[in-house]
Image (cartoon, rainbow, N blue to C red; front, side, top):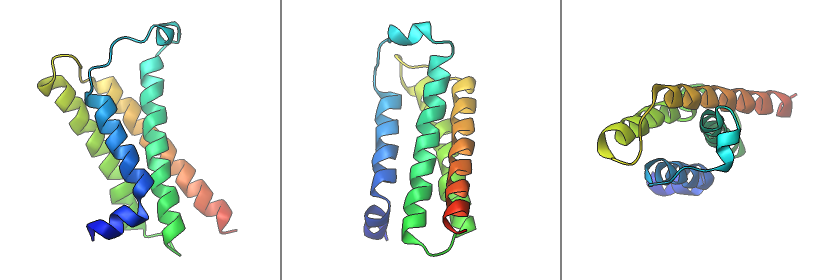
Length: 127
């Protein structure tokens, strides 16, 4: 089953690993981003919207019909739970990162946006 998952969802898994590394690595302040209001929150939204969209695209590529329950769990619930876990890890297991509820909210909004993109792609590709 793991081999099948790796073959069908390689970009999703790579994106997940990338998000874990970026979320837990000690990254200093980025000077350019200080000029953009809520740059950190926009980054979180875009990252999770992209992640969720990738899951949807890989699912649509490998399945004739939508498996709604599977998509709901893997492309909606899982990224949100992952986001919450990463925020908790940042808050309680690192001294150089901070977990924030607003980051979790931005991540969840990103997941909702990615889900909307996935549903739209499915809808327009099957018309």
